Image 1: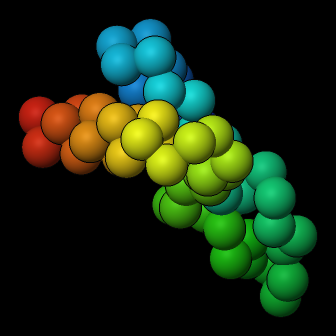
Image 2: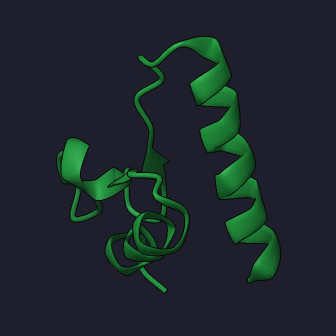
Length: 63
């Protein structure tokens, strides 16, 4: 599954929004270094960031 499709499920199933890595990286030498990565902004209070990380972990564990 590519990074764009992967980011839809955590939002829908766990109410956690992440961005596909390729959205924030520029292609170089015919390859996007952000592809297959996720981007998270940890700007909420620490407790909320930890909860979001736990939700993402639960999602990934199901795969």
